[in-house]
Length: 397
Image (cartoon, one colour):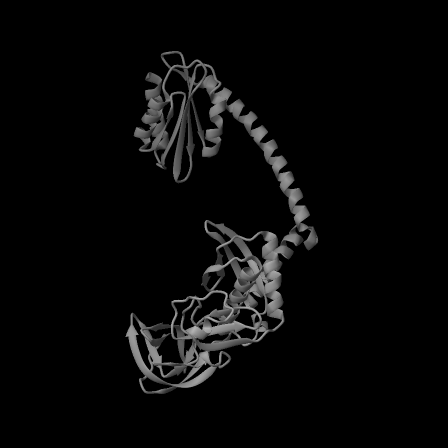
């Protein structure tokens, strides 16, 4: 069994070790050592990374009591090797995991909101709470969490019998756990069973920032970043904000006001554009209608070809007021063809039959009511030929 040196000293960055086993699996080499400083993935915490001599340790995992280092090259069984931890990776893992512990404690202590799920990946950390907190409450949680971090409180690891551990003021305790339990205790704050690595003092977490909060059926999911991750994210966001301020010829604190003004101006321009577009469409409809073919029953057969399905749908009320007219609107897009049919005022016919004709011709699907229907199909290069075929049949209906 591998001796886990990180359990006694998380600050230890390297050690000597003996190779106990080396197994090749799917092009990777899994190496077992007599002792290691590399933490295997577990308890919601990602694996450490590092090197064994010059061989890269990509991941570490524990299975059936054996700790395996997943490497990109083999090592000789029985050889004495140097194990070196990637300290930046270890520090990141500790910052995220310890920050999550402190935040969970604060949520529980201040608002009786319990951590019911924790997940860490290379980009983000999420904490699931069983009770949703307001924006103001989350700000209070963030302030209180950072206060504990900046007080640089000591963090102690205890190995206690389950009966003794149950007597501690723990945030949560699983009564089914038996034997010796590993307890991570932040002074005058969080006490919790945990197998992960934590720094010796809270100050090493650096800082914690709640990036977003999302309502869930059973509470709320928080996305958090701690330490170097939080600093990197805020550097990125600050750069984006400053670039935006430069583009707007404004100071950083003037960006929200400038943006609101631009948004209002864009809304006004869009409204004006809609009005102009509507007038142009009315002109186009009248122009096409003047050249439209007439069916045997005297109804005009109007057809329009557009590039936008939304515009086609919005046209239905406009063509619906035309007297004695059957309208066919086709919206041709790179991957999709949408079609619409509508009867004007005092117009005989049934759009359900017309949409069936379009579906059969284009190989699409759709439906509707007697006075209006719509459908669609995958794009086809010969759509004009198929449209002409539909119009020829509609002229005879």
